[in-house]
Length: 327
Image 1: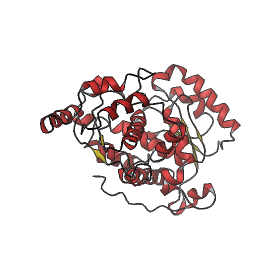
Image 2 (image 1 turned 45 degrees about the vertical axis):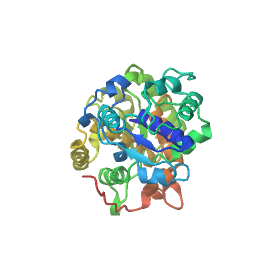
Image 3 (image 1 turned 90 degrees about the horizontal axis):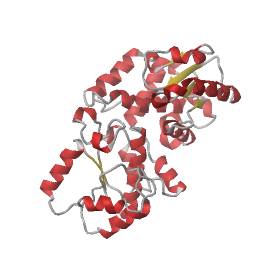
Image 4 (image 1 turned 135 degrees about the horizontal axis):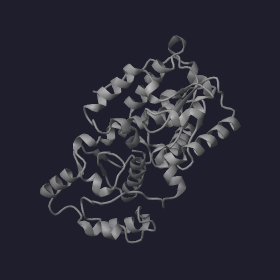
C-alpha cells in the first residue's frame, strides 16, 4: 500500500496543477497494473478508509482538488464511465502521449503528462492507464504533498488504543518502546546483514535496550531469523500485541476487504513506529522513509500523538480516544 500512497501523491500534484478533480481508485496488493485490473472487490479497499480525505482537501495545497473515491473495481468503474459518458473521456491515446517523455519505464514524467493533459483540456475525464509513479516533481513539491498524507483518523486512534492496551502503563499511559523496520519479503536473504547493521545503528544512536523493541516486518510465525535481536532485549511483533484489539481490527476491516486486511495493518505498523521513542528503518525501503518523514512531521501527520513540551511528553499522557464509523 505504501507504493500506492506515492502514486496518490503524484496524482494529487497533477490534479492541482491542472485544476481538475481526482477520481481515486481502490487500493490493493502491490502488483502489476494488469494483475491489479483482475483483482476482485474483496481484494481491494477504498482509499478514503486509509487516508484522511477531509484533511487532504482542507490543506492549502489541495483545497481546489475535489477528491472522489470509488468503491468498485477499476474495470467496473471504467465500464460504467464509458456507458454514462461515451464521448467525454479520453481514450488510450492520452496514456501513450503522457508517457512520451518519461525517463523511467515504471514512471510517468511530469512534462509529458502535463503536455498531454493540457492538449486535452476540453475532455471531461482524463483516464491514465498505468502506474502513477512520478519522480520528477521538485523535492519541495513532493515533500509538501507527502505532508498532507495523513492517515484516516480511525486508523490513527486505533493505533494509539492498541498501544495503550499492549504497552500498558499506569493511568492509561503507554510504556516507552523503540521500533525497528526490517524489510523481509524480497530481501529475506539479506536479513542477517540487515539485523547486524540495525544493531550497529541502534547502539550508535543509544537505543535503550531495557525497554521493548517493536519489530515491524512482513507477517511471520517463524522468529528464528530474528534471534540476534531477540537475544539483546525484549522484542515484540504484531502477534504479541493485545489479541482482542488485533481481532477487533480484523473483524472491522475484514468484512470490507478480507484479502487486504493484513496489508492494511502495515499502516498501523507505521503509526506504531512513528509514536516510538526511537526508530531504526531499512535504508532501501520507502515504508521506512515514510515513517522517518511522519516522525519529523508528527504534529501535522499524527496530531493525536503530538503534545506541547518535551517530545517524550506523549508517553506521559493518558489517552481517551473513541473510534467512530469503523464499522
